[in-house]
Image (cartoon, rainbow, N blue to C red):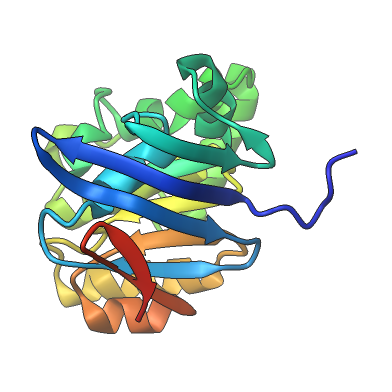
Length: 220
């Protein structure tokens, strides 16, 4: 029987390179239940690559990936992972592809087997929780940058994930929207990883801080 205290994410000796340069070189990382991790480092240090490896969107050259207590290596191993970990992309336009907000937020629940009625209830509850009441029929491409970011977060939360990965969630946002995202994250009962260059944002939303340096993770 699987122990309930297993690490939610555990990476060991991960190596990944672009051309001849290793961006991850023997990296070890783990996320336990209740962890809210900030991940910092210069551009090109491998922060986004690390998160793509967790989601199965990139494959390391070597190393071991264990997520929710199971080893993951093949593409099929990550189907369950993508249903249980919500990944917020750096660019909201990469997350939103349906004509309306309702369709975008309902897409995940419907793909997870919810009925249209159940999906509609989930959409309404998620938008209300993010103070986006009345956005259901809004045209996605006409939203402001901040509204797109909040709706893209709604698409992730509507899937009721156990873990969140957020890649530069406040990039290009105004102070008001940033404050709303801080409030939302602090109100969630989820473990998450935040990649951000915004040190104040990281300080206010995480309880552990790591830096990627020379292909490895060190606690900052």
